Length: 422
Picture 1 (cartoon, rainbow, N blue to C red):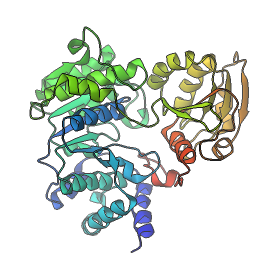
Picture 2 (cartoon, helix red, strand yellow; picture 1 turned 135 degrees about the horizontal axis):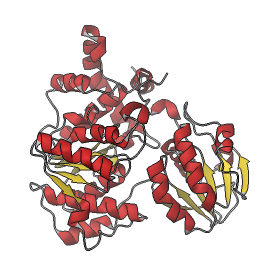
Picture 3 (cartoon, rainbow, N blue to C red; picture 1 turned 90 degrees about the vertical axis):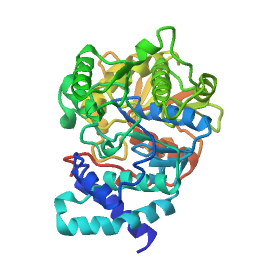
């Protein structure tokens, strides 16, 4: 089978949705003889911040001379971004090789029990384990895809768990209250495994504490460890300093992987993580900022950064009306002008839906465009303003980054679908 055909098969499985639950992943892992099970790992969950915190933990570990395996989702441009060794994404060719290694297992499971056949995300998770084992990494950093309790990554045996934050997102799958969402995130807690806890609401924290007591998981709070000030990081925003604190504390608690404070601090000042207030130069000397902010909690931490830009031009596109409403209400008061776009995503808000959510007292200019019209050439931007900010969706951020770098854009067909998606 050709590489293109293999990728079509793999990504075509997303049509079945993510189908939360770990039975399928456990079945697949057993067939594969539990790859990477002996490799020390960090396991991260949270509404926001888990990707940045994962990148920070990876940076600290690599700075100590360890070979790292980083598994995150979704990717921005290419599938291989999800599986990185020493921060180098695997190639499309390697994705194909891993998919073909997994295909016989998929087909045999499907033949015996279709209900246990793994999803796209589960196969990617298994591919990460296979790659990390083949590369003999010293440590793995695993980010949950959705929730925690029923996420495919939750078959791991971590050194340390991390719950970065809990806010409203994916309520249709995780629950309509912070308590219910917290209960799903708390599903990563395991007996005797320390867990780092970020800044949570009292409602969410009470759920985490109760679950930790029930399973015997020691909790360590970032606020207690860093009473005299959070670590510095080159990633922008106070929320990133909170993530840096979570990363540092997690590394301190992994006793098999000792760290040196000076090395850890230096690593946190050299972290790279795309689409998190990422600043890029445009060919005409102006500035482009890209951030994947896409929910209410994320908007709250981004607004102070927007305020410092003095009414910037904001290119905005969102997936889901609930997210779009929080986004528009948050950014409109601090934006000079808005350019409405529709991200390449089947659940993206239409231009009309976005326009209807703009507050009535917004006095700036509003226009609509396509992403291709605004970013029509590498490092170019057809939007007015000395600073242009792209906000609202990681899918939008991925397409903009692809166009900025002159890379192929594969579109939403290579991304995850959530449960219940058509």
